[in-house]
Image (cartoon, rainbow, N blue to C red; front, side, top):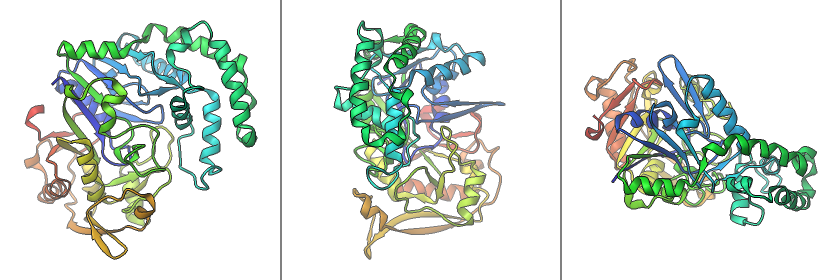
Length: 435
């Protein structure tokens, strides 16, 4: 089976980009596939003195000779990806020669960003979801509504101007009650058509039928690496709804977003921090509102790659990660940011929940139940040693190994990879398949 996948197991920001970059080199990967989400994702990769922040483009772009595919499950703002391409090209990376964008990708337009502002203000459900304000959710809504959706391939049809005019007229009606969130330029059909025509010309050499490309690649036995965006607890169907993203960000979204059948996916790595973070609204059982939470945020530089927002921080939630490990069919666990908790005098792990006086190991399906959760913790002594130079499990302090063993036991999955710093080299490989 030529396919390997990397998915996040928490609420995103688990350092998946580092792992994709690492695996692209170690597994002789030929193609890296981004299969869902939009520019609301942010992957940070550190290679030596260079730091790269990616949003649309798969992290495999940093490895020479690797083809990077943006599949149909992604939604895209053409201007945003062009800015990203230009930035990477200026740093000497041959993006046009290593990137293929699906003509089935749905496009984010200015009206989607206006709709996002309205929703984020809490005007619809009375509470802000905490989106990135990049129009991702409204674009997915149009995708499933179908009639007002525009795909990448439509940029090259002969009726784009007419199509945009039709959609603008509809959006004027649907946004009439939210005029304070809408700028006139976001509903200027003529200007939008001109802008997107320019995008189309620049992107055209990189656009094609990625479904056919990937099916041919699997038939030929080429090695594929699937890069998930966001995290499993943000999955539209299986996450903490409605405080979720707009796509299947857990393992269940791989085939649907990429078009590659599940039979070609042989191994799935799940990525989790040694603690937990979250941005935006929604319940967070292990969230810390004290100095420990602030310490973790500062030590881990927990600020959003896409938005710069400070992330909410808390202890490792074993109940939540056990749920997402099972949901994603995870073969090996990647525990990231071990260098951050190595500076703490004691470490807590949530091993169960208490809801209305009853102990449970099940992650609630309803957000109102999750709000009532009281986490049940185990406390482990910290090791307070610098682990950033450690490269084998045997070199880790005894306390760190006990922590990893307990995490593995609670979530029911072996630890395959341990990150002890942001650089590609600061990684412990415990999985024989990756040695």
